Image: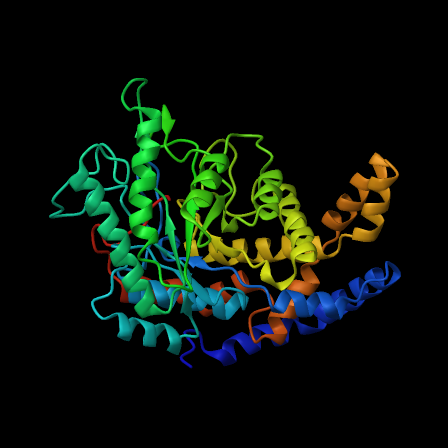
Length: 431
Ligand SMILES: [Mn+2]
């Protein structure tokens, strides 16, 4: 395997922090033992956690006002993979990468597959892009893609998705995520029911091209770029479409794609109950689709989402396996640092949710002991599981402190020298 960071540097970093970590770990083990919880089981759980990286997240993102590029940004999909490999090497939690076409379209899919494999990476769901026009494209998506009035534009969008499936198949992917920004900016612009009928008709064409062992993830988003009526605006529409299309169609929950104060964990519970929870795009937000780092604004919400996932896993068993992916835009931080911290925050919520005493919780719910039921969740959320996460990393050969290690080895400075900026090459986006 090709390690991007010299493994001896990671070991040196860990050696410095090892004694402190072991002391913190032993203290937490004692606390958890008094609660009847085995820290070793939690550490094993943490070691098994995986969340996919978005290829578009390793370049600096931007807003609709401006993009302020960082130094040493990846300029092509191979360089994006190298950055993803760093994140995985130091966190031990991100061996999967989600590609976005045509941004990441490889000239030689087999070579890209082999390159990823040599870096210890494989490919999660691939993403299609019909929310912008590509150079030389025959039909514009200005007025929609899968829902466009133009049959030729719709067909072009369907064919692009089918091409994504074919590329993904060659890369070992097992899923296609479809997000369309289609909708209307003004009342009267579009017949609301007609647009959804066209969407379903287009999606049937894509669904028919899915290999037997693939899933199609339908991603909803409340608004933007359509500001009046987005065709797939909410989980209800997404659910209805997934039900209509068939078994292989599932719903994808992007945390930022909801109105402020929406009870996202309840959406998660509903979709899980009816077998349509396909996966997640994790991020955080304050106002809208901010695409901020996971857990940076509302870590309690992230915990409550994982609390529902833990409940669903207990009810549904091993068959319940939603796909975990990050979807963030890093505008003012080093994207590698943000993605490492975000992977750790999602993993933290996963482990905290495993701390919930579900038997006690069920008892408090049964007895209508509202206060203690709420406190049962709070107690798990308040537990600082950092030593568990750090120990899981050390045992997996990753870094005790990923960001500190990353800064020590000087990866960004090295890339700044090796990767002179190339205008428009980043392929970063907000999706
Ligand atoms: Mn998303």
